Length: 476
Image (tube, rainbow, N blue to C red; front, side, top):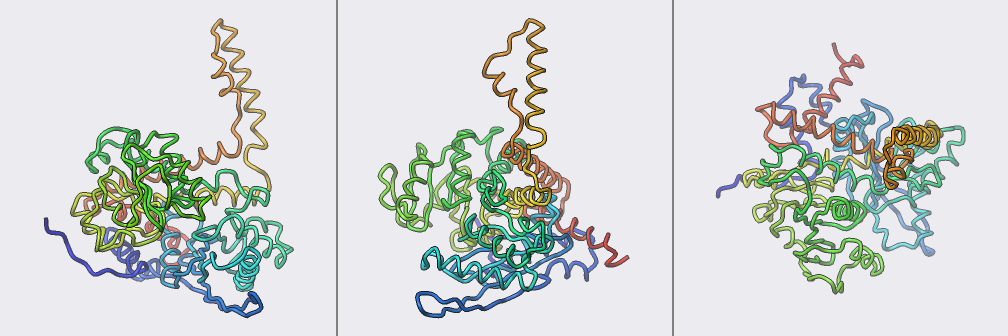
């Protein structure tokens, strides 16, 4: 089989090339198309921190791709390979992601060039607070301007340090809790945020399987994930929650898990929870796990036969060198940019269907939006209506039983419960992911110019961004 050849490009260029293909399907003036395509601004900062008696200099970035909606939104990653190119690409994806799922934010992203494993907790706190201070001083953090969230190498701990630093320097902002999302619940976070990106991936896959023509496109059968053979690349926050929910709630068969130091394989199905516990107890390593076959070369496992391959870690893990060997029928991009532009051309020729990152990992920003709303309203979800709903449901049960029908006790217990915060968050996330895929589905099947889901998702997002700018009066 002949496959198209293309030169590998950077992450940012890959995003922009996909953007160009989407633009070609739309009727947008050339000047506005160029404006929407490019990043608005990037702030680069260098700062010193005294570590173990010596001064170290750190470099970081915060990019804003589009401020058609405010605040702009996007995570902060701490990694030893982060770069301005990567930060710009991620900020661009955030704009498209937010627009696609109707979250009213512009796109932003931040990064600090650091390997967190090389520093103690108190050192990481000093570094994080200093980085936050630099961004706050230039209005690159603020509840109404730019709202970070966790990303690779960061989590609730770092967000707590940032909001604390922001509160100290912006004491007159009564909405200071909304300056970042992904915080601990005790500091204004929202229940369901930690699992949000992974659960969003599952919601997206479930919706895909509700559309028979899309399932057929991927050379699969059935209307659910049940029994599907799944490979997970990366058992971090996103990969773990994706794998755990798929196994626990959807009865998927997780046949392989790939990590930085090797892969675990069991064609009968792995125990995700047991592996994750082992990894946490073993300093992030899966090597030595005795209940599955271990392979040191984890990259080779990407090429195993499976129904669904879910890259949930780094970008460019599926590239020109291995794309032709991929045997998955469906690739779900839980990570940002895991499939390169050149690799996608090869995979499309092979008939592999890709559910793109701009849609599939939007669960994190969706629930971040819910957290931001919670912080602005200064009240947790469910506080006003949970007990009232419980009372109304109990009255309904009593009314049914007065007719002579006995409601089973297990149903009584379920029906009597009002919706709490995590239930409402999950409901809102599921609704968001379902609606967004339905839009992608309709765009893909109704527009002959569009030949994959990525271009469909980008075309929808770009059109919404363009409409926002046009409504502002940027041009007649």
